[in-house]
Length: 392
Image (cartoon, rainbow, N blue to C red):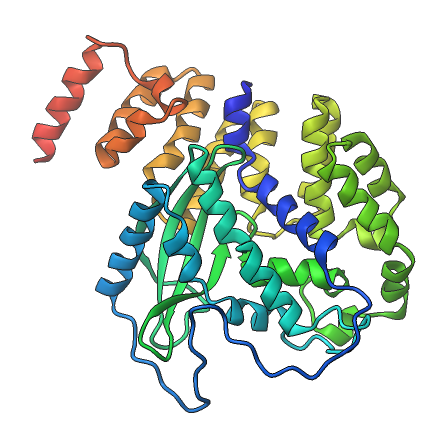
């Protein structure tokens, strides 16, 4: 399988590891606890406790989505960065975490400053679009977790280094009436951005699943993290330095309870991918699929496994399940086309390509997708035009 397509199949993994390594490398340590007043996110006015903001309308959400897409296409990431409500993301990430644990590790001001200065996921999106990716507004959607008065917009993110992901942006209104992004749901990861941050801050919360703080924080688990802090940091540092063999060896040295952590598992998978040994990579991928059964990100992660094992009908079924999560998107037919070709159905792949390009003409510009285009003069073009006339 060619490297370009492999990047499409492993969409989002690189970003997830970037997120984790960033937080393990820059969390404030050993700072005295201070009493700081709440800090408003840059550009977002604080709200009074009883304030009820005016609802965001569907038309406003559509205009917002198009403005974000257009500004990024013009290599201007400032619009996206200034509309992010880092205060809301910080509050969600720190909800119910003990303020004094590990000498100020969870101080709100420190995290807010870190996110505001780094730009977090929004800065990553902006940078990757500048490198040849895209952030395409698809539609306004109904989504779980939306608060009264909010709208949710769905974006397709094409990352030139990691492939395709889908983001749901939860839009609310600040005290000045301006629309801001309260939260981002990362479809490939199967969780909100604030929860991905939370997972890196307190990974012990996720041992055995997304349960309550008290239920997850057993004495044994706490001891494991205290005893292995340096090993964990060394593991992610090795990955960041592209010493993938050492990162994998350090993962193997972790206690079993820590190996179950989602962030650590995904780091292990991406390190195995970079090692270039297909047998080791597929072994790690199979192990991850077993450990993460029931997680909505498994279908994204499993695509490469299905292709490598020749399980092409499973690819088609997996794409259907992904569309149940993100809704219809012609871009996903790229993977269906590849599966159909490998199933000995190239004519069906050509038809699906033409159908996809009609739904979204920009797909004809995608280098990988264009490989499924019928050659000039192919009779399938005539049949496709006839189908259009019948449909009309």
